Image (tube, rainbow, N blue to C red; front, side, top):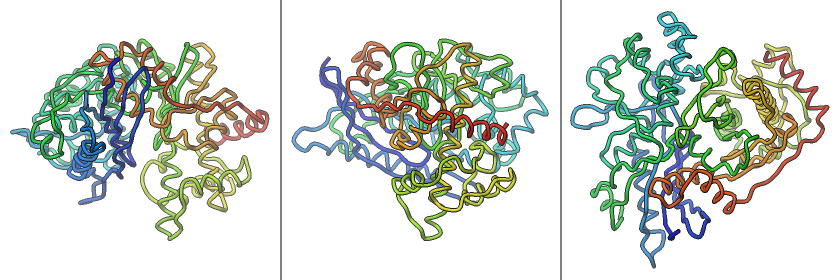
Length: 495
């Protein structure tokens, strides 16, 4: 394998990074050349992503990468972008982007799911798409747009999900990558094509949905004007990785054998298994699990869980109150707080939207006749313990649907840095937990690019490279009886 460099842009809901990956002698090394907050805000009453600012951050990442080694100019073998799911931009005549993309947490989306069900029953929507019902899925965002901004439909010629939109700005080619399309609740996971009958029955604009391409598709070369502006000496290929960030993260799960599941841990926690085919039946519908696309046409059978958003929103409120603490400080406060205190349902609807999270947690505790947390450490511990119990509930559901025991939980992504939550997960689930790598999404993005051009031969080889390249940490369960008692309380509160 020749030495090669790839650039991954990894956008999470809270922050983004440009990561330069160097592949040599069966190992991958990563260098974060640029970090940035993911720009968004409220304008005219609507939560929006600041697309121009995001695009500028991509160009800053390109410039910093191009200048990262003055002695030897970087020659990139590929550039790829991954992002969170469901959100999109619209392209109008002449290729112009029609405004800022709406942010999935915008409040206009919430009523749309129930409105859809008055026209097409819930069961039929699931049978057509196999996707978990969440109020911000693209299906419901389009219904909100149809009601509130119908003129945009008239003006638009195509729809591109966020990573596809960035790939278009980089390369000039419009295409929709399989894994990101699958988050929309508009794709038939059995065929890998759009669920056009469903969309037509809802009077939603099928004509906006374009070509679906597999993960690892070479789209086109970087546009020469972008290369010149950003100081690159050539125009490397733009490669669609597994463009949903979780799909890329799963490529970099350092797993062997078949008895494992994953948690991609960050703002959201996505917990599931990798399958050859979707599971669309009464059980998966009742449990509200999802069938999303993965590298190589695999199915990511998983559950979306609110994740570290709970702690992030608590911290934002405390910063607004003039009390700024790092995440490390908050985690230490949680470590020092008493165990097995009040619990919440992380997926309780009010917790989804931005705003005073400690007050929402207090309201949940009062509603469920629990004493609310009394300190910052107790608030954070409440969030983390509740997440760990939710992981166990999700694990039980996975094992029930699959009809087999799962022995090992792999945790990847930024959340692996929270060692307290990793140990809580082992304790609550009574399973071995293997945590790492932290930059799994960027690693998976880069390895998918490498597979696209033949530098890595298979997914198994990619995972072997991950095992050879990154340290992981193992956690074993402790104090199982106390966690079982706490889980019984959690189930009585959350159902």
